[in-house]
Length: 249
Image (cartoon, rainbow, N blue to C red):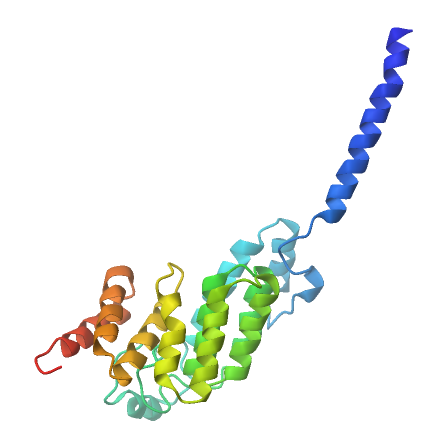
């Protein structure tokens, strides 16, 4: 009889645990966008399905970001246009990602840049470095500030307190007003973050140099030398730092 009396208590405990688990499950909110929000640019739907099925969204977001870098690293300019664009300008990475150039340098249509940027964030909205890089490329290299704001605002939907996104949004606003000093000030706090793209650092160095803040520009180039492993950015930073440290500067 004692064993039979313990059975209802056991069942009651199991029911209570089940009810609590169901409530907790309903209260749980995934940090990722729902699958229906993912929009595919080109091929790759099978990979997205795999990433959803096996919980590998962050890994596949990394892969899509690499694809975006490869896509943006493919020049759309003709040979003679590239030669004219490169003459007299500082070095850049595959013709892009460097904002220290004249008109036409690092430009292009790249119609898939925005959908590919959003796709990375749809897989992993916490990929802060990708969001910053993509938005800065759109705003300051491709001069598509509206699309850059769309990328940052998507990131803010899932990270509403991400101040780095807000800083770049402010910088975009100042760039529309053609105020390089204000753009440099808005970006400055982001430069100290470990996930700050080196392209954004180089942009800040160029803006400070343009505004006459040579000491600030030199400090940023020195930081690039200390933290970057990209040989193109390193070469450019050494050259610009030597110019800034030359007598009379």
